[in-house]
Image (cartoon, rainbow, N blue to C red; front, side):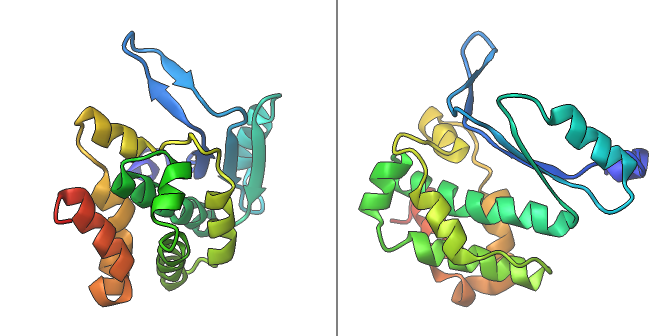
Length: 183
């Protein structure tokens, strides 16, 4: 939609940060060093300028020339993290213990989906990223679940289920069913 309105000025990017909307409406940042990845195709002045503006102390900014890769890299990590923590209804450290055998398969299913869509995301790297997260880390989906808010379940698990189907993504389906209450 944005590209229809601003065709030359849209820069795809992702951010990895734990933040929470506080009762007074402000945003509290729980993570120490947010990481931003921007898609900066060769010759894109707007994307290069955006990367330069964000390159400030306290932010880790990286670039990649392929927008598809940037977006799927984030979704693979997010799907694994969100489904794991929300299914367990626990922060990531306790969720990794409770569902120790889920991290690798969830990452593999998400990465297989990325491959179908033209991105190459290493499931072992995603698994290592999840295993390296601080124990108290909570996904936004878990926070929404605990607060009784609507979940972004379709946005996070939907691509994998639609692309691979239930047979190709059995653990993703199992997590969705558990989150929806069919434990």
